Length: 124
Image 1 (tube, rainbow, N blue to C red):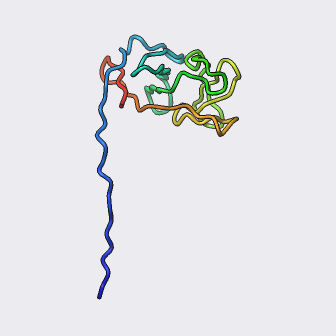
Image 2: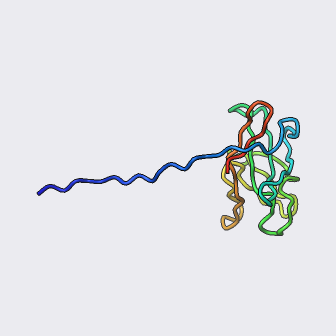
Image 3: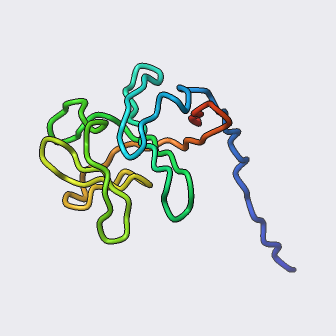
């Protein structure tokens, strides 16, 4: 008697894109903050990266202080990663995945975000 191998695949979730603000609301190389379902989201626009025009969406609440200040942080690059430095305790968070370089137990939520014409859209 032969055994068959069964591969169970989870159904793909449908991504819904929603306009959050306009491209004109963004400030190059800096953060702006928008509301998304009762949560503050910091948006960072990096128009001249190696991969082109990029926008990142990351939680605005600093996990160490509890203050909504991430959108006021300084954008930079450390160890090849694009990061935002928290303005209070200066810890660095990767814009791509929200992980903290100095304190691995700290993490910020990130959302997929894109530019679609003049709209900045976020997935939810």
